[in-house]
Amino acid sequence: MPKKILNYALSLALIMLCLWAGNAIQHFFLLSVPGSIFGMLILFALLVSGLVKVDWVKPGAQLFIRYMIILFVPISVGLMDHFPLLMDNALSIFASSVGATTLVLVVLALGLQKILTLKTDKES
Image (cartoon, rainbow, N blue to C red; front, side, top):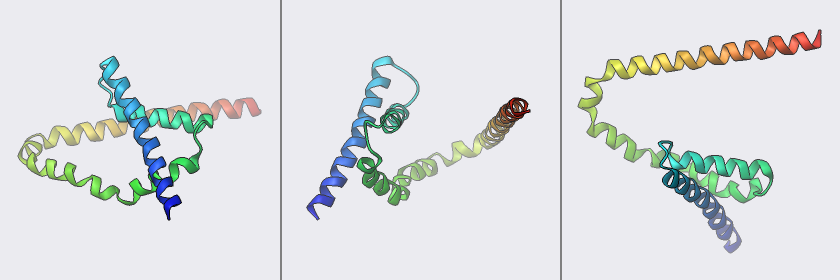
């Protein structure tokens, strides 16, 4: 039992350290990208490079995933507080969401088509 608790503590500490480093980068360079994104990229780089083993992060990550729904409660309450504002701008929010999704799908489809045609040309 103490070993399991220690694994959780070390895993969460490693995740939080990456989050802290990402927030520090965002704050130091005054970037508009959230620090949590930089933290995830740092953690990803550490995992890919092998400096951090997946088993070290897995307990904390599973804990976050298991209770993720609780983390969305404040966001839901915030949306309910601003419901009139959302309804006033519903059309523009919907249009930008559909437009952005369509743009991403088209760009990905064209990119994949280009990659696959290059691959088949090399094989021929």
